[in-house]
Amino acid sequence: MCGIVGYVGSKQALSVVVDGLRRLEYRGYDSAGVAVVSENKLKVRKKAGKLTKLESLLGDDPLPSSTCAIGHTRWATHGIPNDINAHPHLDQDQKFAVIHNGIIENFAQLRAELEATGTNLASDTDTEVVAHLLASEYPKTKSLTKAMQQVVSRLRGAFTLVAISSEEPDLLVGARRNSPLVVGRGIGENFLASDVSAFISHTKSAIELGQDQIVELTSESIKIINFDGSDALFKEYEIDWDISAAEKGGYELFMLKEIAEQPQAVRDTLAGRINEKGILNFSDFQISDETIKEIKKVVFIACGTAFHAGLIGKYAVERWTRLPSEAEIASEFRYRDPILDKESLVVAISQSGETMDTLMAVKHAKEQGAKVLAITNTQGSTLGREADAVLYTRAGPEVAVASTKAFLTQVVAVELLALYLAQVKAVTQTSEIKKVLEDILDMSHAIDVVLDTMPQVKEIAEKYKSAKSILFIGRQAGYPVALEGALKLKELAYMHAEGFAAGELKHGPIALIEAGSPVIVIVPSLEHDPILHEKIISNIQEVKARGASVVALAEAGDEVVSLYADQVIRLPKVPSLLQPLVATVPLQVFAAQLAKVKGHDVDQPRNLAKSVTVE
Ligand code: F6R
Image (cartoon, rainbow, N blue to C red; front, side, top):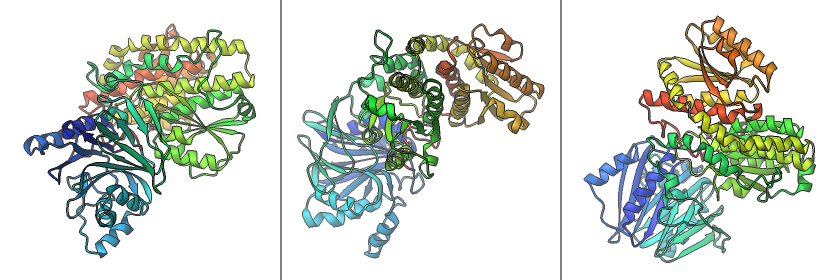
């Protein structure tokens, strides 16, 4: 949510920053802006709308060359998305420029104080107060870093900030609280960004800033201190993917590329975690066997798509560990009184590792003594730091706002986790665990097979482009898939869609069905779940009797379903708990295709941002 990038070094700073913004645009695209220091003066260009609007402005009204620049891409919180509210924000004398990700909760009070002393604020944003506060602090020490230290001590909320000043033209100062900020260490140049994709084409050497730290960068030096001025502890690491992973690589859309990458993402997430004897080998898992043996309950917390992975995790934990398990929406969990203690394992799932609702829920769980395991795709993320242990999914960078490959790897991770708990607690036969692991190892091939159904799925999607509403139904592991299918359709095609547990339909939602209503049914395996299969066939008949047009996702060889459904999309035959890994894929393609047909921006749907760093 909001992308931040800063550069200091010998290259043309503006082009480095604009290139970085292009890679960060998935974080927000309500407006974009840049500031450079040139000949001891700050120059700013900013524009409402997507980055291309800013690029045209820069074409019409170029900025002078500079070796120090900052850039921002915005997801609006305070103030509508217009040119004035776009970042960077400046003080009255135009000596300090600031960009920000987060929400400054006490901005109204700070704004009132500034106004009382005669400061005119130009925008409606919370961010602008920081520029004015820097201007008032700076004369006391003549140090941008020290001024930043004073200013952050006055702020409440989430504020990752980067500032430059005409007073110290070769300096970039960042401060991190609650939203991400990563340093890129180059040779004769240094970078700051919300995520490493902004600078990976220049350096793979990164430093993860901790909470409440300030970083001061010149082209030759990196100095990191805590907000109180003391020396800070931080972590340096090498980025293990390269720029091609963050580019479209010949695909028309990032989302289509990421859908196609799913077999590899699943393979990568499994790599090295199952040994040759068919035993789970979690060398990177930091929770001891003794602690695992004491766990009496497992609670999954997450938001959106990641929550759907959590629901699948709950089913897997119940099935293989026989422990009570729950899946909770993080923003609800955080304000409830969940029953947790030191024998509870809370599993927080988040692609970005920066989702504020999930981070707050983790804090809530820790306060009650629970152990917290993070499942995240992002090295160096806040979630990874806050948790007691981390299980990394290895989906690689996910750029399209709608989550696809990250979801599939989250599903793999929760299944592995459940099996690992079962292995350590010795509650499931080793032979059964081994068999499931063999099946999991086959899943990347199964996903490849599903990807071959894309042309058929696209054709079906186009048929429903004028539908008022589309319902998705499933049972057990098919229920989270139905929720995920509906979520994808809402966020991409802007169509009304709902996912239901198929058995719930008759308790109300069936009233929505009228002649021609599309209903997409995730059919349980006839071979593995004959009883559930029978039930869903009844559900199909119920909606058909009321005029619905049914598209079934059913396994190869299930001829019963062909008797009732209008169209059948075939899935490979896989065990029930693994079916989400194949059944979700056609629904991703279905939503992307409908969005395309309707002329929507598939990679950057309206009103959304990839990383939701506000509550
Ligand atoms: C939907 C989607 C969102 C995210 C949710 C959580 O396609 O991407 O629903 O899943 O905002 O994000 P993370 O996983 O980063 O915590």
